[in-house]
Amino acid sequence: MTETDERRAQRLSKMERLRELGIDPFPPRACLTHTAAQALAAHVPDAEQQPTVTVAGRLVSVRVMGKSTFAHLRDSSGAIQIYLQRDVLGESSYDVFRQQVDLGDFCQCTGELFVTRTGEITVRVTAWTFLGKALRPLPEKWHGLRDTETRYRQRYLDLLANDEVRDVFVKRTRIISAVRRFLDGRGCLEVETPTLQPIYGGANARPFTTYHNELERTLYLRIADELYLKRLIIGGLDRVYEIAHNFRNEGVSTRHNPEFTACEVYEAYADYHDMMALVEQMYSQVATEVLGTAVITYQGQTIDLTPPWRRITMRDAIFEAAGIDIETHREFDGLVAAARERGVDLATQPTWGKAVEKLFDQFVEPNLVQPTFIVDYPIDISPLAKKKPDAPHLVERFEFFIAGLECGNAFTELNDPLDQRARFEQQAQAAAKGEDETQPLDEDFILALEHGMPPTGGLGFGIDRMVMLLTDQVSIREVILFPQLRD
RNA sequence: GAGCCGUUAGCUCAGUUGGCAGAGCCCCUGCCUUUUAAGCAGGUUGUCGCGCGUUCGAGUCGCGCACGGCUCACCA
Image (tube, rainbow, N blue to C red; front, side, top):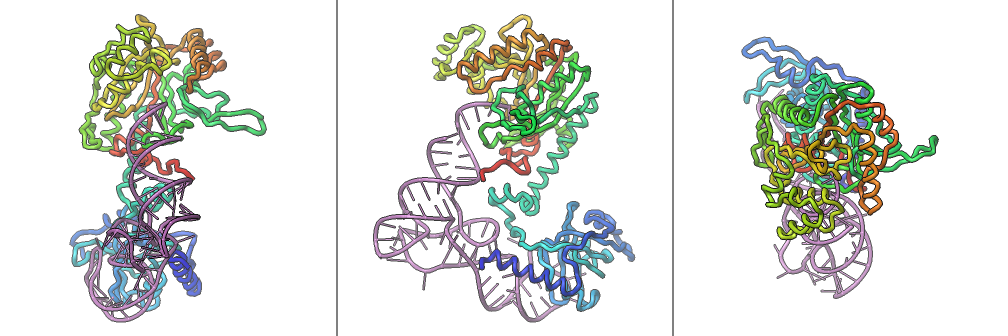
């Protein structure tokens, strides 16, 4: 028998003993009057008479001193110390606690509050009941749980053992809730669009493919909500947003999980400048609500999210960083030659726009520490964005970067159905040339556009990355409760 | 998909030149009625990730595989 089995057998036999004593090891309910935090708050300083409370929680520490025992019960509000005395509880009740209750079990304790010699508010237990048996031991109390694999695969142990992990996920929830509050406050309507889509679109990414047996058709897990949300703009819902999981069949890394949470926002009668204002207001407001400040620290760097953020065109950003003016190299070959002088090979890039993007990734992106909007992108890498009226090789698009992380993407939406069709066709040509991730022609979306769509600003940003930023985490797996791992 | 690093008790980790598998915590027994990393005395605990090989002998050396981490590529 392995040690694990022995430990489990010990606990099983304690459970059986409880049953023999007429105690249900898994009673159906508790009956408490205070959470741990409420009980601590209920203590009245300097009063003779203290309130009597009933608290419940998981037993997380025990200190036995013969005929009396100190222990801590923990619930989600915190931990509270309990004090059990043999002459108060009676021999049998005290001995059952001592002999049949293990660390990790759940108990409920009733008693008057008092303060110990060392100043800790404590429940002097006059009655206790058993609430639930743990058949396996919890991670060790000093060092907690370090093993990354166990932390991710058995996240419940991680949450129990590591307070800072728990804090990250509590913050994650608060961040998402603050985002909702912000968008609701602007009059945006939160909507839900399909996860299972007959045709994928709205981003350049490889989809997951699935099959509906009854409909006898292939469906795709969404890679973005974009095309559905724009249909809603066409339908007269002038401000909509969705917070949803996207699924991309691509590499897994510290910054990429196959399913991740994105928020997309669309506002009729707005453009990409309005979306920039939205982004900087939202980030600073969410940070202030959740962290109490818009000045954050990420991996030792101080980052100020207070608006306005720096705005710089992609052309100027590349010129600043690499000394190459993409506007004087509008021909693919010329740009490749200019880049070669800087030691960068762009010859393998399929188009001028892709080459520009590569230059940007190489020279600019890693250095964008303070929040920055990069504005005006090449058209061939932006098939859903509106052309710049005075520069039709570019579109009204921005991405924003914080701490070197790409945090979101937005544009003035393309609402000309004929131009949209032409863009899809360019994507098809790129696909024919062997480009991996292109957007398929969505006839149903074009049909929607042909019914008329107002000028619209659209935005997508990664919730996981926002959480990483605001909780100072390097890996996306630290902000997703159950990240994808190999089996 | 490629490169590098890692995997030893339930947890956190040592393990020397290839020579009996270790520590702390946990757990068990005893003592202890204000402890809190409780203390004191004693005790149990292993598929050294998996497989193959080299060797008299492998946790240790070699090869393969699995999983994890980091970097790169793709991407948000």
